[in-house]
Length: 219
View 1 (cartoon, one colour):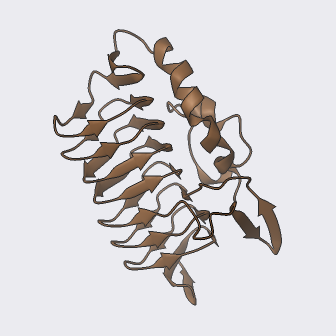
View 2 (view 1 turned 90 degrees about the horizontal axis):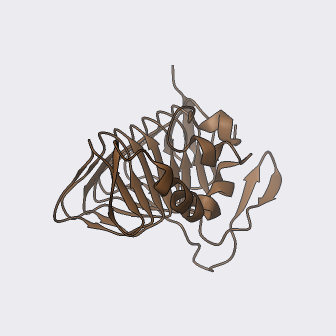
View 3 (view 1 turned 135 degrees about the vertical axis):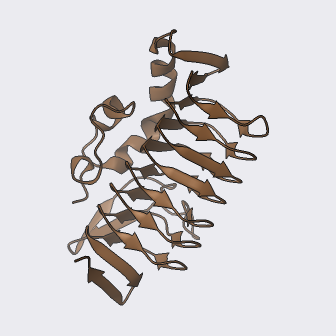
């Protein structure tokens, strides 16, 4: 379940060519910047406008005047960047996404229909379609010891080779308010994370995460 195609529905989205080239989604994180820089100039002039250096915005997207946006950045159709959002660069935002008040993004992909609407931090992360971060929930992307992130899956260690790696959210993930997704968290499809949770590791799909000792099936 930790492979890209098992977590994320990306066919037909602006992120398709990026994600289709990697077996595991975190392998796309170092590729985001170059992907945006190469894709931007090829976007249709009738649909996208380059509004600044390495920033391309779809004609139907909305960006508040009070938002701070830096490239490389692509903002897809019908997406919205609201008041006081901070986009630090290397961000790919697909269609119908919401980036809200005081939300900060860096080196991340919002595939499509993603909502990060209130006081969220999303760093070095990939959020699949119809995933949602409740108010104040964040992806923590660096370990306290600053060492590379190592995943544990089915009693095996997986070296990511990444010092910065936030979270991968599968399709239809709901993260409650003020939850923290620790570095290297992978959340399977259709998972619900309770508010105020501190999540670490890999959560299998179709679960309700109440706390680390209580993870139950969704019926």
